[in-house]
Length: 430
Ligand SMILES: [Zn+2]
Image (cartoon, helix red, strand yellow):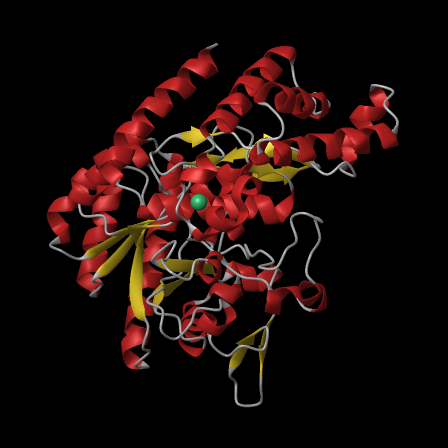
């Protein structure tokens, strides 16, 4: 699981919709990561922390002895609140997308500096500094966002640069006797170039290789690359950066993949789609939108419809309370939906989209998937996990998704995902 600081207030009051007093004093210290909420079973095997976070978001500090600290913690596991007894591993990488538009990786990402950070903060695994051999990247020219094409020659230069780094990196790890396990990055732009990179990394002495720049390829193209390199792997570990392709997990594994990272199932929780909540039988559900009425976009739409703010607030309360009454059995499905839609209608959408959404909400309310989930979040928070409203509900739903993904039967899940994709593709066509 890539870390983007996704935490929730464990004592958030859903009825009053308010944060705990402890959260207000120190949100970082009080709030919990997904692995802190799930105490009985892990939501993932490890966390990927990109050093690019330290360039902008999180300040790295050091003391007189040169020890590094993240938020006063001298160890990355303390910072991520991973208990000593936990088997959750922490992998570090550069987060090379942050400098993809620059010709060279910035000084911060020198081989020496990166290796030093991994070692001082006690990462379990450290990825060699790379430069992504990407086809296109988004950049700004004259204040306009444009996609810039990267020439084949430049992609080859980046591939070679990544291999020079990986060579220096593994030598340094051995020379300084750093304790983290080094992972070498293979960049590429077609099956042959990936094969060449993998062979070089093996000759450099790596027993864990990570394939970069794969996000830009479809499933078929990734399979072609994996088939090409599989004969050379001989049981070494292989990681795929940023790739979660549910339909192909079994096949990826057969071709030698041992790990991957992705925020996809976490983020689906709050993306605009019919797939917000993954049930333990592999079926996806829409979360029911009841956004806070102080949402700026919502206020603007309400003004366009000549709806006064007090009325907007009333519609919000009515929608939320109706869902609570539905759970208690004091309001029927149709009346609940009517009240939900009266508020939902104000979120800009076409009338056709509205119909589709109402059908999806009906499905969610009829099936009550929160009652069937054995995870600690659904057990404790019930229907609130299915309500699209603020960080504490939306992130809990994301946490539930990754927990379900890891703890569900993958074979069954695989066939369900195929069906879901067919439904989704049909929807796109219409
Ligand atoms: Zn759950």
